Image (cartoon, rainbow, N blue to C red; front, side, top):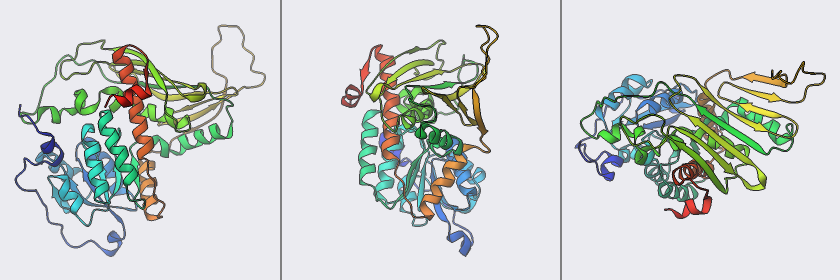
Length: 395
């Protein structure tokens, strides 16, 4: 396995020359009126979000970029219009392209801070995939850069629950006091296939970078890379506060055939100011059983949110129970299903913030949500209470 330097991982410096596909005939006037975006990292998530961006009425693919030639090829063939735009091998070339107004950062998690800082310095609009980074030091760099960003630029992160109309309706109920005094929140992140018993590595070069999700240094591990969505939602419903401390348990139920994950299940309790408590209940390898949602319990009712729906529960009059064992839920007051994948909501809101000249900057909340995930991981690893201040002093 070839050892990859940080410089090579960030820039793709091992490539002698960029792979550039010359654009065909100049874009039409209508296309030029759209917001040109470049995809930095054409792996699965870059292609997925990049496709939604290309399909948005305000979006226009302007360039793609990846260190690896096979990923470039996938970007060309799987992102609409990818075969008609320049294809770069390092992020510096992408950021120097004057046709790129927005950079979609979809690189491995540990590179997010470096690429974010570079995009801020290039004065680009930024859509950065979650989480904000893999470690405390990287997130501190990202937070510092976000404070220095051009205030006319929109900076959004891939915490798409914040843009779902169903989540926003639930938040409106919470703010109006519909459920009363909320003191308890739970995020469930339970999903996955059968536990792996073997692993086939497809790559001879840059093996860890290619398989980054399985390595703690590259991804932050499952609490940071996967469960951060639910953690961000907890922080959001806590009025964008972060917890003062956390305790947690977890471990591996099954042997890890490749990589260095230390946990495949986690039960973490977060303590927020004002007596508010949040739980993360996370289990991997569930043989395709899925339970991904959040619950918010107040003195007058409860809210439940997910990527597919939201529910409002409250006291129902004349709902007597035949006996003490009748546990059927009769409290549902309101429910609405999500009409589409909520990433589309996030992309639409992002482009509208640009074209309507109403820039947003999510750096602070995205950084704090990622740090909250790291706080929980530290509590599990250390098997004791860990405070926010201790976590921040660790790097």
